[in-house]
Length: 287
Image (tube, rainbow, N blue to C red; front, side, top):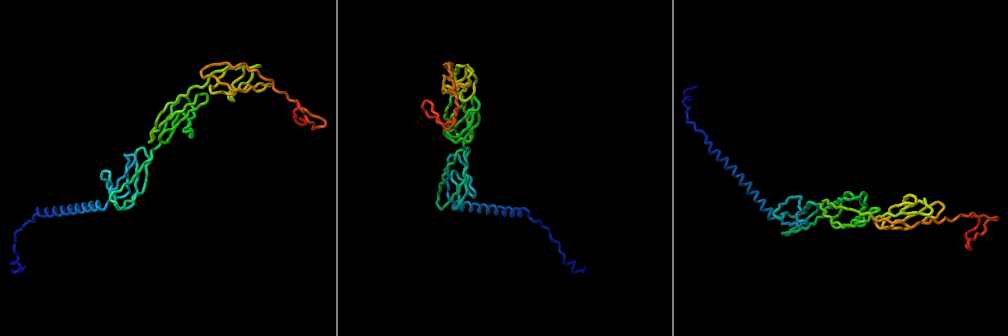
């Protein structure tokens, strides 16, 4: 290295960079970004509020909920919506949900009314007997004891019937809303006892077309009326409608059987002769 090059090197003092001033500039930059974003958000909100329309939903029941598909803001009972078409779902506990389309127009405040249909209810019937026939509003049929589902909300007339028991009609108010109610049903016996005898005996006794046994015999007869039929070979059938007070006993008068009519076979030579019985034409031979 030459002497001239050595004389050009000069030493200077080292001064470190001020770290505090760099941090301050960084903090200032972050604050500016935050303020800018806040201002943009505020501008968007105020613009939305200025462009949006107040929409009020009047729902029955009052505790109904509104679900709007799309951008919306809820402030108290009001919804802020931009102009346009929206799909809404209205729902409430115990009611069928409802879906609908609404159109928000230029009008500053708009109202939409919705009424929800209540869910049907269930009725659980407790009964003192099995296989009771239940007629609902003279139309729908069911059986008790058991659960009857999907009864519409409101008053229903239920009629309970079973052979040998008095029918029972009851008015029931169904709450609906998917709830299950309970009622108790007790049918009362509708029969008493009646004894039967015949001359001659050993006739087959039918009560309401059901063979009971042979005379003499004691059996149940309905207060509302039972049809008896007494059959004995060689005698005419005896038919009669009888009744007895429920819970009591009675004896039917002795039934005297009537000998059955005989049959006569008539032929002639030549045939085709007229046959008269007690001056009444019966037919022609052979018969």
